[in-house]
Length: 163
Image 1: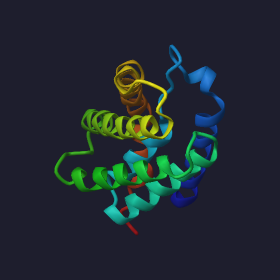
Image 2: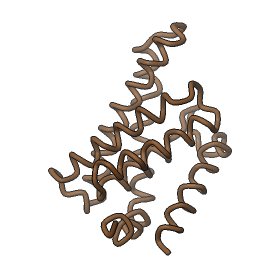
Image 3: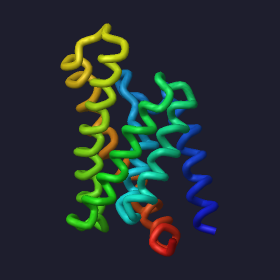
Image 4: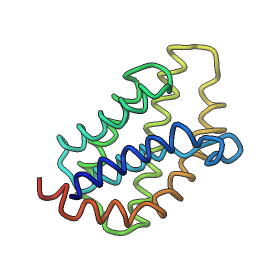
């Protein structure tokens, strides 16, 4: 039952991420709720399972129209693997610790995304985008963790650990 709820949660978050950008955006910046969901699910899973979850979420985000297909899939997959490996070093049962880890991992993944996008498109300044959009998105993702943490913790309770 929880696996069905996990998939439904993913689909609902994908729909929200791709269609409600005007509602959820603040000053033109929208939190990446799929990345937050992936990282929260990855904190209690093995690196292999985290990589699969990250690749699926990233590919779904790419296919839904976010630019170069495969770029988000690779970045989110590796970010999820790093989250899974580093979660054993930290106490991720705490909402604030998970939020801090999501903040740092969002910063890393979005800076990589901006770096690769600047190499592909070469039409914008890396530092301007990093300061103007990436840092506020990290704070917004931290707030999303505070909202989404308990639901994902309940989903992870048996579903991810029991696999």
